Length: 584
Image (tube, rainbow, N blue to C red):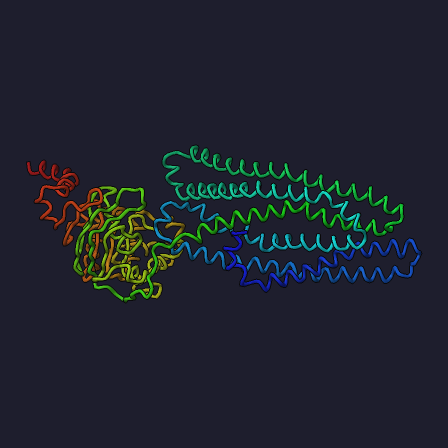
């Protein structure tokens, strides 16, 4: 029950639906138990005593009870569903909101399919228990309590003899719950992995087909699907093992009832109608106990799902606003790193080691280095996507921790190497960071990113709806729209992370011409593998193994005969050879 205590804040505000449902459930249960009593009166007072004049009144009473039960059942079920639906509506919103604010570190290890499974299947399992399972548990206790009271009224000795198997049944039910809960948690986990497998395959279908790995993906899916099947079979085995035993214990009670109850009728201790009513009442106890396995099944599923939901809700938001953060409309653009060291996990080697630099407002800084050198990590610290384990990062003389995350990230514009576009119109994608901009501003940003021309060639121009992740556009086109989106936000600090890697040399040259104008009066960081993308920078940082090993402008670094000069020679070797042959 610890899970339900922790999730109480999501369903307890809607307790009015719950209590209304419980009031009508009590009414429905009471009417249900009246049926055997009407049957007892019919046999003992009407049939055996030939009081046939009572029949119309009993029939009308029975019809009235049925009608009342129907109305009460409708209200009980409706309010029960409202309790579950409204509770998980808020829960799902909070979960989604939580995912928006979790740090990059969380998503480094999280699986998309698994998260989707938690927000859909696990939330739905929790809802079903709130709407139906909770009611069934309480119906179980109400029906047993009322039926037991009526049985005691008819015969104390017959009641205790008939229900002598209940302690054994309780033990079986307890063991069933202990066995089935971890089994259902295994089902939820395997379902999350299955979802992840499907999501990754669909997202990477181009890679799968280009490498002819369809067979491998099918085998991988079969393995995940097989694991899901095995978990379900394991759970089915538990069910098959315990349910017949519960049914056996219930039927033993019926046999005892018929034997001992028949004896009591013969010696006049109880009347025949009371034995018949007793038989119906016993089933009002036996059936709930036999169905208790199903209810425990629901409870176990919801508990397992609730634990998976809590795993998201209880993740520590390491990166969040401090109390009374600074909100600014615009930065000057001064950036300072002082003794900064970054580690993505405690076990990893540092991604950045002892980084120190000071950048004046309006400067253009180039970052170059091999894969894993740490060049992308530097701007990620400026926006607090990650936090350094040592040192400080300052913008305009204040630690980035002092700013609100919204102010910080609205003032730092990113153009990433992998351009993500939403399934929306091109205009909506460009204006995503500033939805309030005019269409003229959208078009101007697209022109500067060299995207306007190809956009106008599309069937609906800027109103063209893109497929998932920009499906239908080339890599270069997606990258140019991504650049236009960054330009449209008018950031104080602009980060270009290999922003022109997917375009041809001519388009790169044209974009760089426009970006020079865009970068005026704003601090810019250009991350690139190609020297041609950053040789115009005011200062270039060369990184190796998380350290700045060389810094200076293009001409200065070429004279140093260091790492930068070696990169230059590799990239321009062919061009120099062709030029030499032409001159020779």
